[in-house]
Image 1 (spheres, helix red, strand yellow):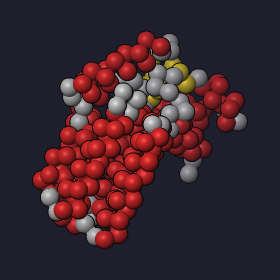
Image 2: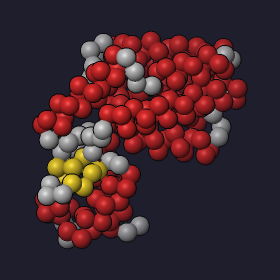
Image 3: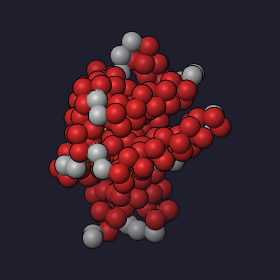
Length: 218
């Protein structure tokens, strides 16, 4: 693996984990000093991240952690909703005992995190919950696409969970999704996952408000 690719993965992980916040400026010199490398592999890593959309290169401002136009973001969430709906439908049809057990365990972990009221801990358990659904669909290509887009949307899904009462709502939705999958309700599981992910109504307003505050701070 090249140096620039290793740096790209490290910076990407820090963005997804929230250690590098949306709207944060990524200074090449500071990053080079921090990682003990020259600016060249840092620049290459940032260009690679710009291709994924996680980083935006702006004239005279350099690289920032991307806070995209709301309409573009909504389009990505819409695509993610359809992918997750497909995963849920196939997972229901192809559910095996090991996946059912993993799904219930992930739901229990989400419940514990929601009760603690910690969005960051809940986000980590929420990620596991969704990846269990992806794996249970038994379609490796679809699983890969779901994981990639989920990772791209991770900073914004984390932002959503900070909205008031969202943890409790998310948990209720998870419970309904698991019930549909376990009971063999393909259409129900698909519809519930689509509704769980798609951003509309109050969720849209909350997300846009969060993005505006990030852009203002940036």
